[in-house]
Amino acid sequence: MAKVLVLNATYEPLNVTTVRRAVVLLLKEKAEIVERAGTALHSERGAVAVPLVIRLHEFVRVPYRPVARRISRRAIFARDGYRCQYCGSDRQLTVDHVVPRSKGGGDTWDNLVTSCAACNRKKADRPPHLAGLRLLRPPRAPAPGALVVLHADEVHESWRPYLSFAS
Image (cartoon, rainbow, N blue to C red; front, top):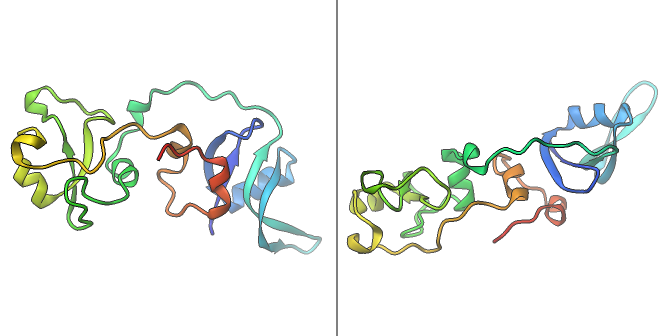
């Protein structure tokens, strides 16, 4: 596991960082280990447990950023579990507008879904019901905790209690 979950002083997820950056925060006494791996990093003078989750000692105020600014293809795919939201396929994935842009649909969390190329072509510039398609689940913005790890390659089991997934 090359990534570490960073929690604010209030145990809210802030971001995901590298083990190296997490160890620096620990050595500077700006954070403490909440969950640790079974291994340690050794130096000439000592050893430091490899962290999986760390918590900052002081509260960090995060400036408000609208969720809409964080939308990306990878974030949409991750939210939808890398599966087409019409047929469940995991092949040739694209992003589809539920309400087509030509019909006034925007680039919002509740209008973008993962779609395979075949379903996207079948739907074309029509609403799903007119194309004979049905969404497996309605699209929505991910929970704040999910946004932290949406770009992480792997979510370690020890992170789950600190993340508030709205699934």
